[in-house]
Image 1: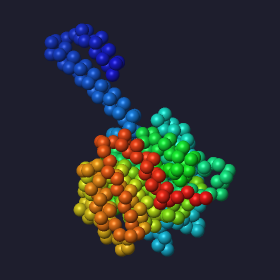
Image 2: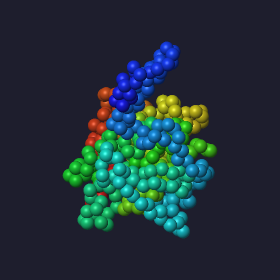
Image 3: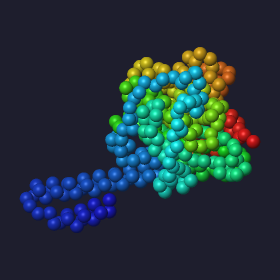
Image 4: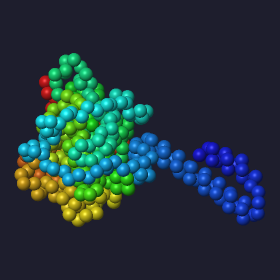
Amino acid sequence: MPISIAAALLLWGRVRGPQPVQVLSRIVMLLVCQITAVMMVFVMVNNANLIYGSWDDLLGTGNHVRAVPNVQAEAGGSAAPGNDSKPQRNKVIQQFKPVGDPKVPNDVQTTDLKGAVSGVDGEVLVWLPPQYNDPAYKDKTFPVVELLPGWPGSSKTWYGTLRVSEQLKPMMQSGQVAPFILVSPRTNLLGDSTDTGCADVPGKVNADTWLSRDVPQMVLDNFRVDTSAERWAVAGYSAGGHCAAKLALEHPDRYRAGISLSGYNDPGAEGQSLTAKDPHLKEISNPLYILKNAKTPPKVALYVTGNKGDGLEGGEALKAAAKAPTTVTTQETTGPHSSDVWKQLVPSIFTWLTTIIPAQH
């Protein structure tokens, strides 16, 4: 912006030609100054909150859907993490590197994953708890939490803006919180700036399969991870909170717990939601519908936070519909629909999660 202003000041009195040309040239200079000012503010806000992970995400030009295969149910009916493997399947060993973003801690790693089942390609960020490389834990496996951003959102946001690993590391070292492996996969998958709703949509995207099968399988192949659904959870804020509740209730054989921060039940709450555009998808993607229509109450613990008018009522509806062994804990919050509120909740939600998925000794 300073360059555009300096250029305008320098050239303002040097414009030559007929009066209309001079007026038009100066209007263009003012427009350029205004556009660069808006862009600078946007970049500053985006950098502070990690809303978009790349220019492709911002412009809607990055498509991460390689193919949309028909997803088959797991053989034997077992969908627990790690059970997608066949006897002949070779493990997919990934290469990991630092994220390379100054706002993301150096101990967060990233890898580019090609989803074998979903047909989705995208980055997955992983953070290992302090106990992971401790020789005393060399024979231990660790529980996992998948972290989902809102819409639009970046796989970096939980680490960079919500500072999840920085907040939890000392709590894990002191034993207040279980040593969870934290995994944040890409959720912005479509190149037309559309929210997938974390669902499998025929002909469009297998977002559910990417999150609930491909990403867990990769984590299992590369780290010492518990394979039992009893040791897996999923958490998200805003649209990611909707996804977390949906995935946990839809896949109780994959997740023991789900955490929704200012999420919602009705997919229509997000104007760009793909699942909200089809009446049937909209209905079956609603966590309340999933809960009410489950053949048996799922063994899932949900933790839902939100303000009145911003997620709380949805959580209360889930709580009212829950039957054992499903449990729903709600917490009313105050403040805006923003990362400042969600960041403050990190210690308490992971303290709660440790009561559901305690550390193994």
